[in-house]
Length: 278
Image (tube, rainbow, N blue to C red):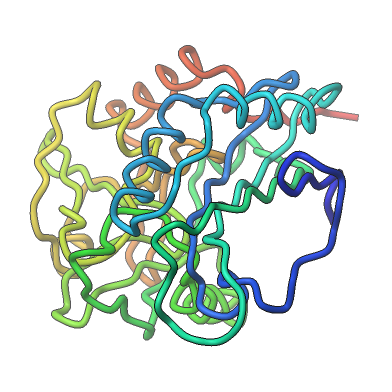
């Protein structure tokens, strides 16, 4: 379900069968929280889009024009999620892109997920995924359209009836969750994986790195299980504690609770919903 679509600034729902995004995943995307018609963390999202465009050699749209299209589509919506796809233009077969190819802009607006307070007070259950992230340093960190690994990893979680899953790369190092970055707390210190070989450098992850002393280093499953606290970060859901990884249980530490409170204060759009009593 979507609440509206703009393609290159025009209302449309038609994608050409020759689209390089459809055929090769040749493009980038951003998932952006909307509050009162405005994109949250817009500067950070556009900075990552710019980095991805540089890596892929794609043309970047004018930021002011793109922001205007986002506001046009999001107008009148108190809370929503916008998906921005930037797809390299091209026709016909063949992997080789044209050096002069423009970038098609596809914006779609969707209902925002509920943020129940119970998830933040108690945490969520996650599992280890059998799926592994491929190691590709050139693409690590950017949010490109090739996401079959995420599709298969999330399918494992759905089949197991859990909210999320932790995924390792082919060397056995923990990289991230299927749709979020991962942090651990041990003996008062925070750690997160480096994302040099795979994974996405999340906007909420960057927020945490800019405000806390976090050691970026390789983490393995045994270190995750020995942590005092484990939590996930995501630009739509914020900071989400993990209460259990299969049989290992974790708690929401004072440090973690303080981080969530600080995020809600600085980014009110991420404040969870308090339960109502009938």
